[in-house]
Amino acid sequence: MRFFAAILTCILLAQSCPAASPQPIEVKVVVVAMFERGADTGDDPGEYQYWVERDHLDRIFPFPQGYHDLRMSRAGVLGVLTGVGTARSAASIMALGLDPRFDLRKAYWLVAGIAGADPADASLGSAAWAEWVVDGDLSHEIDAREIPSDWKTGYVPLRQSTPYQQPRQDWGEAYHLNAALVDWAFHLTKNVELPDSEAMQTERANFEQPNARRPPFVLKGDTLSASTFWHGKLLDQWANDWVRYHTGGQGNFVTAGMEDSGTLQSLTFLAKAGRVDANRVLVLRTASNFDQPQPGLTAAEGLARNTSGRYTAYLPALEAAWRVGHVVVANLLDNWTKYRDRIPAGD
Image 1 (cartoon, rainbow, N blue to C red):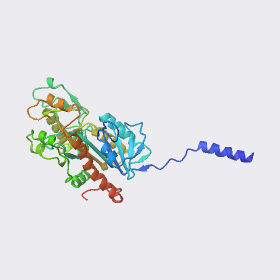
Image 2 (cartoon, rainbow, N blue to C red; image 1 turned 120 degrees about the vertical axis):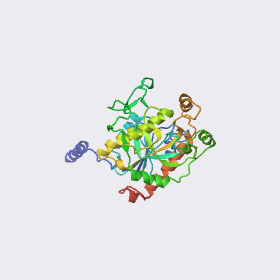
Image 3 (cartoon, rainbow, N blue to C red; image 1 turned 45 degrees about the vertical axis):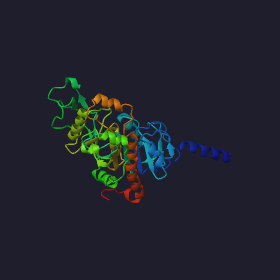
Image 4 (tube, rainbow, N blue to C red; image 1 turned 60 degrees about the horizontal axis):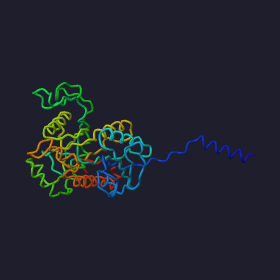
């Protein structure tokens, strides 16, 4: 009887005491992609596939609270696919940041995706490291057919009554990344060879801007994040003015994406909670298309050419995002004993 009583006591104690939680996995680098066309491997690629295949993100973690299952390599690289748009990206990154399976306190974050590019600054297939991410959604708007004749745009900053009204009020529209880390990444990758094609050469020859005519290159340039896929010379002018306004003249608009403000908002909150380090975030956008039509076409005609998602530099831009981003990821991994506790800057 004493034996059975002892057995029963052990069972009751085991049921009343929760099992020890496993140690969270220390993540070295998080690669953030936004969309995938089909499967993660072996078919028509999106932003995620090259990372999965080439960086061996073979271990799969179910992630029902986010957009897509997570993938991780043995080297410590974690891949997350956020889904398209600021809402999905914010939700997915917040879910990841709160996931008890991972220790993200020392992790570097690399957002790597394609974008539309301003032909004044970049050519097709170029790769731009952003120091500023600016939200293009937080605003008031009047339809362009009803704006006053002396307004440049129908977009008005939040809580203001005219475009670019001063003094500017800060409602969190601009995210300033670690400038020293961005400089380090740029100098590390500025000579990376980027793919070109005859189709890209033909298209860029139609533009007058010197940078638009260049072969693909790596540069520093800021990104505007907005859930509306916009297109045209006038909206390009708005994007330049909007970025300049919300960064106090420090930012220069180069690429147009959709998700980065959502990602940065979640990372900002997670940093306040001690879950991530906001000084370890990089945003890389590569030019799959120009943000405006070539001379001789209307904005509507230019948009029609882009709505299929088959941009002239689609595959080269995916390749550029991986080639440039992988150099940074590999360097962080190779020097992890140094960069785990000290953020690279000017190395």
